[in-house]
Length: 461
Image (cartoon, rainbow, N blue to C red; front, top):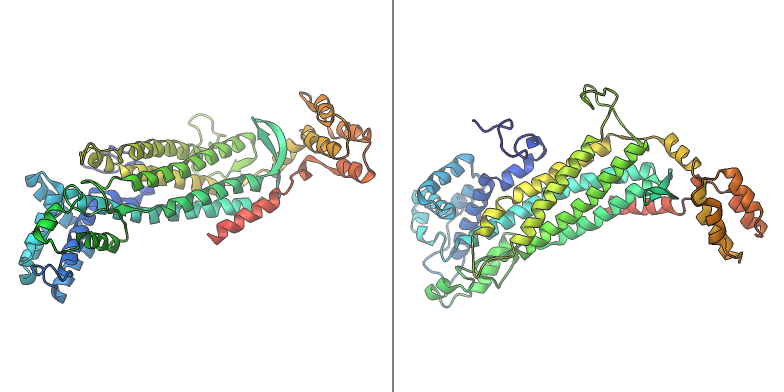
């Protein structure tokens, strides 16, 4: 069958193809080949710029323009040509080298240098830098999606910073908070995890078959290959790893994936909480014209965006966890189990992006039912027991916890019963009056101030 979103085996390229278009050019086979071409040509240019490698003289303007154009104008047709060569070589990186030989053959200056394409390289020199470039590019895409999510959370939190809400510890009525503060907490957590994700170094190596520059030193013993390797890696915007076997050990990749797992865990917690608040009636979901919630129950508007996000977050974390565990482990100096595993990096990141955008969509469809929140608070006056017994402690009344426990535990109380109890207490008049004025809606501490602090931090970025 022809490959289309309807016939694709993976839902990433099928049902959810529209959710991840930016990643397609990064982690597709085309994207990997494009980055391999870039690395190969930047290495040739680095050799040409080095004064102690006379066999590769400085490149003229025409040669430089051609090499740059091969990178910047790399097309699907170019990628297909490389795949044709690979069909004969049965080696994907060698196919890139042969393609570049073809492209340089018609240029007099570059035709003399084709033996220095892939000079001293093992395939992993090319691949690890290609994947490093791909992960760096993907991080920008993911960061933009997180920025959108953080903005939506901050907006929702700011609108409802002062709206009282019954908290539920262990699923039971508990000391009130505000809706805005509970939403803002997720923004606070997400902001911190995003900062950690952004700070992770994407590393690369460029040091030959087993990491010792063996062939390089044989050919040019006077060249400082460590310095040239560092220059090459850092010119691509990556962090240099000077000491490796044949492979860059992928510890930085593991950090990258673990950071994404923590971001996803925060969002998983958010999705489940919002799902619960929708179930309680704290949030309504805006109806979408023409949309069906149930095939048999026409009244339903299900929290499908948060459920979709939850499922994709789980899939993403399963893949990310496998990659983080697998990639840093290689038998002796090299085995190829990492190579096939790395080809699913894009799938893992795609599930992240699908989930994040589903969550963002769900946030955009929420409407608060303030009356429902007020009713829930008014039905649970016993939550003021914490306030009353704490004031009793301050003023030396014996056994305050025990007395409030006897009054409230396991039996709901109303405003009249609580105020009747307060009148029996030997409290200063000001303290008694303050407790008599207290309601569940007013018992929210500094939740609004905390919300505003978090929102301000998100706005600062």
